[in-house]
Amino acid sequence: MANETMRRPLVLLLQGAGYGQQAPLLWWSRKIAADAGCEVIAPTWTVDEAASSAPVAFVETAVRSAIGERAPDLVIAKSFGCFALPWAVRHGVRGVWLTPVLTNDDVVAALATAPDTHVAIGGSDDGMWRPERVSRTAASLQTVAGADHSLEVTGGWRASQRAQAEVFATVAAAVQALHR
Image (tube, rainbow, N blue to C red; front, side):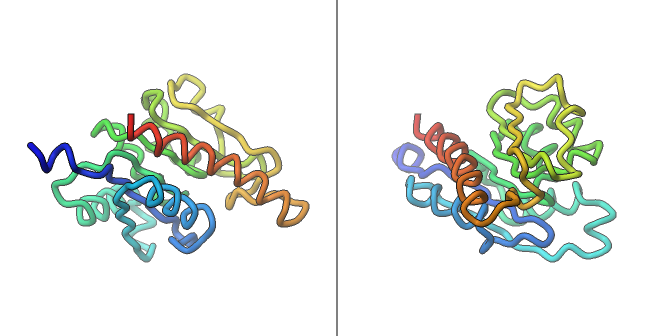
């Protein structure tokens, strides 16, 4: 029982296909979680043809391999990592979904049934961000005006930094909710 009360929240950080753990959205998300006292597991992968043809199965296998029998308290995922959304909803794991692929029916169906413990964030200039496909969800859908699939904004690095600061505030709020 003492070990259970001493357990740090577990955050699962999932990368994109070409957006690794060192990229800004994931690097800062890791830092936010670690600074809040969370344990972070961040598997890496290479998205090959087999992974591309069955992305939900690929990501779910990678998740199970990374966490074993443990249950994360929060998933923070970027793009391809958001193919974990069906798994997270099935297992009752809250999530922050950065640029989920809302052109994929499995991701859309999962987000449509997600409770209000989920937040999905995409850019208005990202062709894969299609929030109108999930209009009946309890999850929070946030659109970053002028942002692309990396949540970068045209107009220079300062504009992107300001936009991403809002994203990190959302990540920080999700992480802080683990301590309540």
